[in-house]
Amino acid sequence: MKKRTIGAAVAAGVGLVALGFPAATVHAAPTASGSGVVTTFEKGHVLSCTGQVGKQSVAVELYDNSLHGSFVNVSLEGPDGQYGGDSTPATLFDNGSVNVKLPIRRLGEVEQPAGTASIKGIYALKGEPTSFLDVYEDGGWLVESAGTHHDLKSKVSVEVFGETERLTCEDAFAYDLKVTKTPV
Image 1 (cartoon, rainbow, N blue to C red):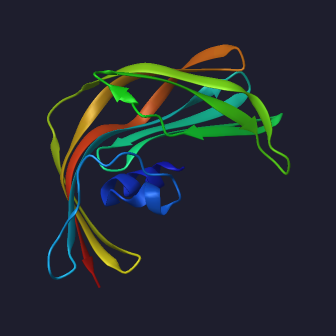
Image 2: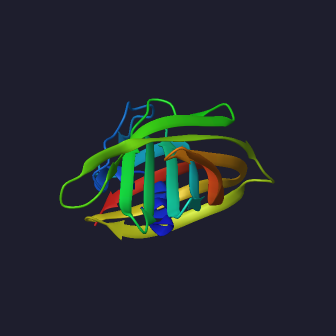
Image 3: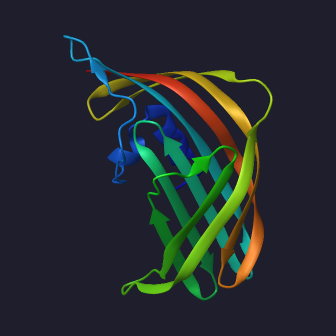
């Protein structure tokens, strides 16, 4: 996923599910009014990281949402092809640390197992939270996401193909949103 896509997914709260990623255990039930309006309260984290492992460019997306669960995606591209993998771990962001392993495969006409990616790191709140508001239409709904984003400082590394490298996480934040969907 591209950074812009994951940002929209966080804003919408339901974006990852709409994109085909499975939902996990529901922690915050939506409420509906008689007018068809659906309101959810969603909290979570986003780390969108990039780096280089050998000759492979790597992108890692880590996302959790109190309503829709956790999702991790790894994409690698280099001279010997493209590789990738994803997972929906029960727990991803755990009291200041992330630690997840997932299978990766060589992508192409015939996908082949290619090993395991291991992502480990730490994160902490940085600075003060900032107000967040995003309003847009999505699939017959007017979606308003309002709340806060709180920047995270992070140190994350990935181990793949026998090499471990530190990643740079440009998008790194925690969020706390009220998401209101109104039929249009």
